Image: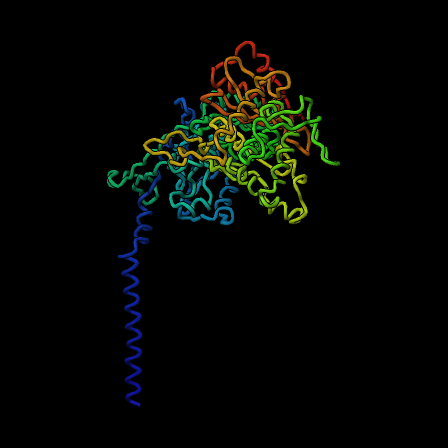
Length: 615
């Protein structure tokens, strides 16, 4: 019994000793090894203010400044530090109602909509104070403990154009904060366009200033005379490839129209113009009215926030005949002297596909010049039914692989957000729709003229025009031209070759040249420019919801091309009606710098035509 009590005494003593040791280790960890409590204590006496860097400037390809910064201010609040607040006076000074104040505080505390909320950390109470408001409030801030003003920079634009291309700045959300430790609640980042794609270059590096506070939280002086301050590092300036004068002209041409214009420099892949219409002034998404303006744009029935050059998809129509002309040559199905008949269309049993009036039969060059539908129906069926492939399924895969080498069916990896891939069907797609033995060449003959299931984006069509200009290769389209002290990604200087031999491009380019510069029957004579050899191809994209879309692709000059253009004007009819004349104006504006008097009538008609139905 005595031994048992003695043993129990040692066990209990050991337990108490262990508990004491655990407490000592924990206290040592908290007070010596862990800085959390030290930082918490210091935060009562030291105010840490973020110093936001000067965001990088944006220039166009001609070194014209287009986006810069102006001072902006946010009102922040640390709710734990708010006490003895004269709410009425505060609301009066800030120009808000008491109801707004109560509502805003409730929003800040609501962790469902503000998951990063903590009463110990600064929260944005009001954004985008003006310089005047800042000046009036600065002298009174000592009356409002817990509130302070944080300097920011707001974007300012020298031209009301290029909103989609340039993008906008907005407050970061919880996902941004979780994915990138650089951001904190109340920070801003690029939300779209160039501002988003090149955010890490433009944003710079935040700095910090430290201030001593008294027992009432009032700032008294710099902490350690500013020796602990961390200076902000300005963002890098960037030069984009857009020609803002050409961009502005394109947006003026597309005023009161729905569609897009994409212009590319074939020799580099640099995007010269990226027009989405209807557009909007980029300054609408800056300042306190940003949310309201954004909602207004979202609710606009013409969806101006929809980035058509990269996100809209259309049947490419007759512009796609050029792709098939190249594939058929490569596969030995046709050559430039191959003739096919056209009796105002293609007829096979009960199947009929119409065509406009022109001479018959036509050879390859003439089929492009006159945009003959029948020629490409004959060509596609001759390929898909050719016994050298074994069967239609293998023939179709050969055809599809050629098509995607032109950049169709997949994203081009443009340095721009939200790019869509379009659609090029494959053998498996038709097997799923019709069954493996349920389809034949006549079933899919509409793809020979760019209809049926085929879809392409305007950026893909402009890239295709660049391929035609280069006779078989392209550079990945991109909007960046240079970044301060930074080497541009080599993928933008790498050539991508199609599966078509260069020699097969010459008769197709000749047909494009004659489509614009040939005699009667040429489908794009409206795009002819004196002293500039334009090569182009019209297209009409069928639209089940209304009037067809007008398409046109072109490049110029014929030799040593400087510009390639793709235009889509929705619900406007044939390619030669609007897209072709507008493309020719873009080419002439870029290469000459002006529109001569003998073509002013075309310019006036394009500028003044309203294709958007008024309410």
